[in-house]
Image 1 (cartoon, helix red, strand yellow):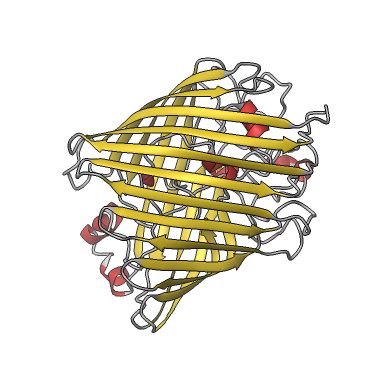
Image 2 (cartoon, rainbow, N blue to C red):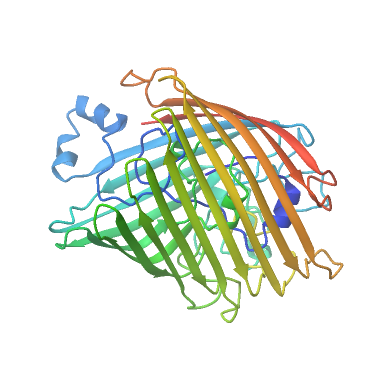
Length: 449
């Protein structure tokens, strides 16, 4: 959820079919440890906005209906030691530079990332019940996650109307609006079973579109080859206290009211296992045709995520990914880097692993670390040379999550996250604009309400 710091080259390397996004564990509270996505039926905690409505006498009616309203705002800044003072661009020949990752930000650039408002009604699976969520986003992050038919349509960058930036530049205007989620949940009276229909965040990923759930402002490379949202139908079933399963179909990666390959569907799911209070694991998958105008070639992604609470202070986590695309054509993927069309690829695959550590120093400070490798292979790389590209990307990030007022009712929603990040690629073609590495310093401020 968003970063903030790869580079234009990474875009070139990773963006083939790349989407950006991450699983969302529905709790809105600030999390200072790496978070594995959970899909429990428990309602989201009552946040500051509802407490404020209480004081106005307006919250009781919402409570009676089991409706919770909450949100957050995020602002960030990143300094890139190689590409500061430059704007965003989809043109590799321009002097503008992508900062990379989810936030496509250039160095030395303050971003108003997100203003998010959620309206949620959780369901009780022990009875027949109906609920759901509407999530609205405004800010710079919104322009990177539009699904097909919502804003940028993912068919052809040149089709973007002039009033929306034109010339394939989905990043203008800078501040945009997006309907991140809009779904209905239905419980049928069988405890542990519910169904979801509509637009929802992806099941995949260790990190999330919700910045409150992430250990860092910047995002992993793995996050860049995962979808943001799906539109479809899911079934959730908790077999027992240890096992749960989610399975369903969708229109494809980041597709909503329009689809880039007709009526082709994909199959998505998650198997969760929690053997104890200290261990949890999920296995996510996605199988189906995802490329524009192509329903014959399948994209297959396997995404395991694990978390281990070693002590009360120390938490370790890891995400792996195996990604195969028999078509590998990014020309129509409505992803954060979709305007970069690097030609039709006959084949692409990727694999990688990211390891996380979070150490709670006290109520005010949590130290977080991440190291990662992503290997990406592109057959017919689209750079005009007709050759294949074999790229290894590495990054290490160290940061601290600061909660200045952890016990104050109104100040507990404030979090500040400075970080330092180092990226390295063994292939300098286009990566970091001819360099093998880059160093970035970032910080964001989040207020959850």
